[in-house]
Structure formats: C-alpha cells, structure tokens
Length: 313
Ligand SMILES: [Zn+2]
Image 1 (tube, helix red, strand yellow):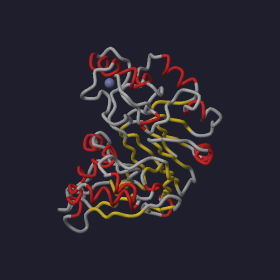
Image 2: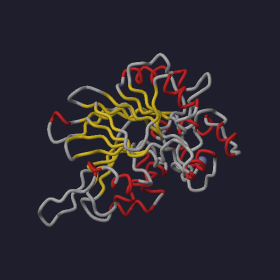
Image 3: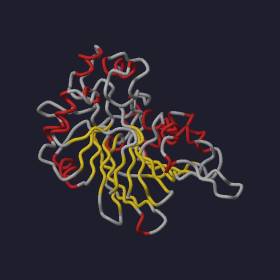
Image 4: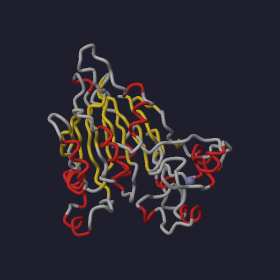
C-alpha cells in the first residue's frame, strides 16, 4: 500500500496569504532553507490506478495535478474522463478537510465516507455541497462509525484496505450553531483514521488534529507502522508569541510538539512506527531546516512531512 503526502501544512498553507511572520517572510524572500507546503492532504493506494483520499483540502486541484498517480487517464473510448480517485474519507467537517470536495464536483462518481454527523452538517448546513448530488451516479455518501472497521475494495482481495475511525474529543466546526452541535453525538465530530493494508497487515494512522492523548490512543500509535501526527505547533504559546494571537495551541485543539505534555515527550518511548509530523502551521520553527528545533525533532527520531513525501506499507 503506497501512501502519498500531497499536502503537509495546517490551514492556510506555507506561506499563508495574510501572514508576514518570520517563516512566511523569509520563505518568500528565499532566505529560509525549507519547503513551501500546501494544506494537509493524503492519498492511499487501494490498487494500481485506484486511490482513496484522506480528506479533501482546499488545495486539492493543484495537489492532484502535482501527483502523477492521481491524474486522469485516457481510456481510448469517448468516456475519457477516468480518474484514479475512487473515494474520500473525512476526519471532520472542517472546511480545511471538506472544501476540496467542491473541486471534485464535475459529475465524477465518487464514494465519500464520513460519520453520519459529519455528513449531516456538511450537506445540510452548506447548500453548496448539493452540487455533488445533481446526477446519479455522482457522490455517494457512506457511514463510517468510530470503532467499526470498513473494508475498501481494490481490484483484488490483495489490494483491499481496512479503515477504522478512532473518535477524538474535538468539537464540531464553528459554522454549526451551538444548539445543533449540542444534539450531535460528541464522538462523531473529529476522528483519526487507521488504514491497514489487507495484504501486509501494515498500518497507517492519520491524525492531523490531536486535542488529547490517552493510554488507548498511545497503544494504538505504538502498534502502527506509520504515524502521521498533528505537528501544528511547536509550543503551546506559539501563536501568542509569533503573531500576537490570543489562543494557546491546546485551546485550539492541538497538543503542541514540546512541553511536558507535548507529543515529543509523550511518544518518546514509542519507537516502532515511522513517526512523522504533519499539518504544520506556518509559524512552526521546524519549517526552517537550519533551526535548532528541526535538529531537535530529527534527533528524537521524527521527521517533518513535506509535499510529495511517499511511503510504502
Ligand atoms: Zn506565517
């Protein structure tokens, strides 16, 4: 099972259009040794020419064009619009994870997997998403429930993958009003995804948002082979220090990398998986590959995801 990182930044990307922090300014000036990054987006191979996307980022169009495996194929007959993208699995209803669905609306048959609550808020609170339901077959929405294993078929038994959603204690997006949010089940708002290759039994965990970390989640992380984890912020007060923001990383639903409760420390004893930080905010010092923070990360056995990074499980 191949895994492709099509985008590795947090919402806004790197550089971010309205940001002139040190990282963004130096990247624009060409004085930072580091890579520009689009907003987080993953693709997982189900079979040759058959891929599933994990979320649908606002940068999806350019990400598809930058990824040869995901570009449309000519078939020889008149129906030449054949895309290798078979489906999309959503981890939340946030615009950063769903806006890209609107870019896939050209009457393309598509399977979309999400918790019932994410489906409900996406399609009912945002009427734009009805553009995905104009003809049949177009987008077909499917339930994925925390704790249940979903099997996505490739073209043979060998190429199937098993997907499990892991409930995280995050909230619903702010476009959903408080009254509605209170009625929706808390465990369907934000999930991490565990994707297991049926042929090899090897597992990826994709967790771009990590609001809390408990023992059960830690043991899942320890048992996977590739961990793509929330690397949004280096420190809890990063946004306050760098751009004069008001909220800490924790209050925004992201455990920072450093600090006593940070993921670097909490996952120090977990050495089996390939540990990769993803969803990196443009203020994060690890984006500068000459920084002490980047060196510290590498020394601790982690890497920082970049666009175009590939893995095989
Ligand atoms: Zn910036």
